[in-house]
Image 1 (cartoon, rainbow, N blue to C red):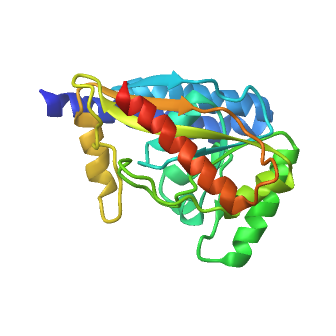
Image 2: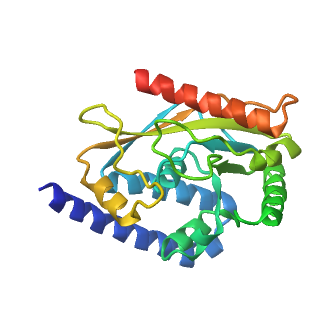
Length: 249
């Protein structure tokens, strides 16, 4: 029965993805930015229950931009979960735009792309991020640079924080966690680490009877004279603290 339910969830999700792509290709060219952002959030909010995922949001996301969200990174699912919690424009690796289906969805959601192996491109993206922040956008990054299992955070890279410093923008720490709602234990089903297969990760996620995605928003903070490295370290400690409080509940 669990596998049959997972197949049904998969079919519903594929139909929802097809609907999202159709909206991006046909409707988005005629919509303004605010209307697009609203559509992205509504689409993400509808996607989670189709996959059997309950969303629980703690704390208060920034009401408006400019702001930069920094979160720990667990899974391919993180972006959908964060979009459902609060619309934001992600900064992601450039090869995502060439992924089938995902590239169209990411582009429609306003993703900014970076070539991680290129230092010159990183400078370009930081400059572009600062421009978008000055125009009032809410951006989001995963400063670990890659996914982990959530039990211990990888060091936060500081480079992209320069955009917040240059634009005098607040940064809001965000903690992400996936929980088996039936047991209350952390679920590793959605994880996507190193050589993990994304197809296996998707299937295992769909097979969890009741998966809960927890998004915990911390307090937004200003740079207050810190350089980007010390600020990144402080933000990492804040995300760890948010996760620790969630685990202890």
